[in-house]
Image (cartoon, rainbow, N blue to C red):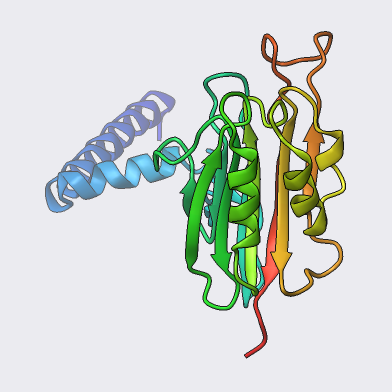
Length: 235
């Protein structure tokens, strides 16, 4: 075959192959639905993409603990007041039993009493220690608490100015080690048991004194808190 004829033959074969390829693609596009074709193209383009791993949202625990309490325990969290407007809070078993939302928090010492056996709230009360003579009423309230009770105490604003000796003795008898060191506007939280002993290692008490050099708020120290898990009474 002459060189010129061989070249023409190659061109013809190349054109024929191109037409066949175009026609095959046309038939493929007609036979495959548009959605499937687009999905296939997208999947091919996404082969090099890195998978995005999302961590699951942390599960909320009782009383906003970081970790759940063990079975057969009560969850608690005590938060003192901070400044004039951040009110004290007491949470027990994920229920706000004293706080601004429940409308039963006030200036002074706030006390909640819970039946240790049933886990039911018996009483809540606050006693103003800045104005009025409420120390004696608080002493009687504490002394009237029945055995097998949990007592939770938190301050809001000032809890010491009109706190008298009989009240200090009643709180000290419950195991407080800080009640006698409380000063004007000290932040204080305290957990006590009446008629039984709490296990060692449970957070029971904290205090933070007002200091004009270190106060978080003007005239008030930072709020403080304790939290933990109280073992229930064995059945």
